[in-house]
Amino acid sequence: MSELTKMGLADARDALAKGETTSVELTGAFLEAIEASGALNAYVHKTPDLAMTRAKAADEARARGEAGTLNGLPIGIKDLFCTQGVDSQAGSRILEGFKPEYESTVTSKLWDAGAVMLGKLNMDEFAMGSSNETSVYGPAVNPWKAEGSDAALTPGGSSGGSSAAVAADLCLAATGTDTGGSIRQPAAFTGIVGLKPTYGRCSRWGIVAFASSLDQAGPMTKSVRDAAIMLTAMAGHDPKDSTSADLAVPDFEAMLTGDIKGQTIGIPREYHMDGMPEEIEVLWSRGKEMLQDAGAKIVDISLPHTKYALPTYYVIAPAEASSNLARYDGVRYGRRAKLGQGDSITDMYDKTRAEGFGAEVQRRVMIGTYVLSAGFYDAYYNRARRVRTLIKKDFEDAFAAGVDAILTPATPSSAFGIGEMASADPVQMYLNDVFTVTVNLAGLPGIAVPTGLDSRGLPMGLQLIGRPWEEGALLNTAYALENAAGFVAKPSKWW
View (cartoon, rainbow, N blue to C red):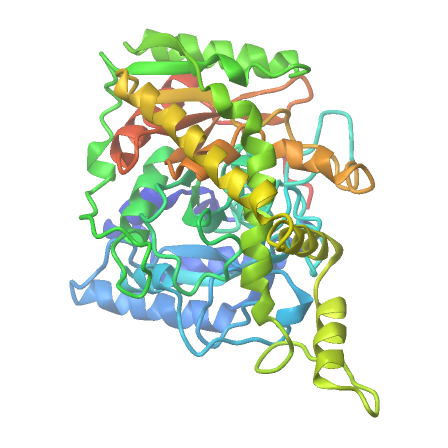
């Protein structure tokens, strides 16, 4: 593997600026690494010709003195983002062959900043999953392996291809989306940084919708500094998205000082879950000590409605998915089922959706349709919306009391094996989101930072939750935690 691929965004940006390499050389190194990484199944739509065209254009722009902030930097794009002329399937059979005639706002911003697209990355179908096993392309595979075992592990979900690609040095960074933890959980499983911004910080226009009031795009990177660089390029107001915030985007990288003296970090007592592995508890305690040693004040806080977060999420998210996925019917684009003589348009809808959607998507659409139905709307959906308001208020009360950020585990375990939970009760899989869904329900920014290895040599992460719109302060606290943890472990290459 080329040494070039081991760099992160900041290092590669500096190397390009100094003339130590070119975008063409850098992009070529990544394309070689991608071709040799088939066992990881991270990339599902490769775009080598487009990548080299953009890399050449980036080098020419630099020669003219017109380099953007991400000029010539090769990145991967989650298959949920619409990319003009390139397959955008959302990991689903029903969008087979769909090549949008438009570009999502987030990817447009990245291309305007000069970034180079290496290809589209694997993901759970319509972002519904915590292990990347619901993908029509088959599961992405974690580049990490447990010591003494050859078993394939999940890279997390739904942004599993993104996390695997970043951890395996198949791109400098990648885009992800987070509806209930789909950036932060895979980041923790693969030893990388994953940032979910405040709801509305990044435009959702051109991103295939799962649950519109929860979805948010964010960066998945090799370091906190890289996350700050990428978020600055991704964020910003978009008139095409009515939920996009009309706020100025600061230079997040410039806010990274590592100085958190006088900051107050809250530790929510409700996150001490029954049956939580001792290694996660120990990691959490170490995180508290590291932030305390960096000058922060640690206080216990209460988020009393946390226990209702998972059931609330798994009413609201499927309800919104049920509405959003009604548009996939085989009429205008994507897959259409073969019809028999005499089949009606209703038969076409039924057959197309039955063969186009996978089992998990079907399950969530059915749940969502049920909770929105006339007899159950108040009992489930409206009640879940009221509880969501209470969960949001818990965080507001904590921040009003002077808490600057909240420290929790990112996941209830390290990466588990592919197939390990596939036949289990689906609720067991949903429990992977126990520490992350509250952040989406409250619309807050959250970041997963790799902070240690478990007894099997697998990465584990901690989560920091910040005040709304204060990603700069959150990134700075994460930067202090990253510096204190000194996590530099990488997976041994086996693919």
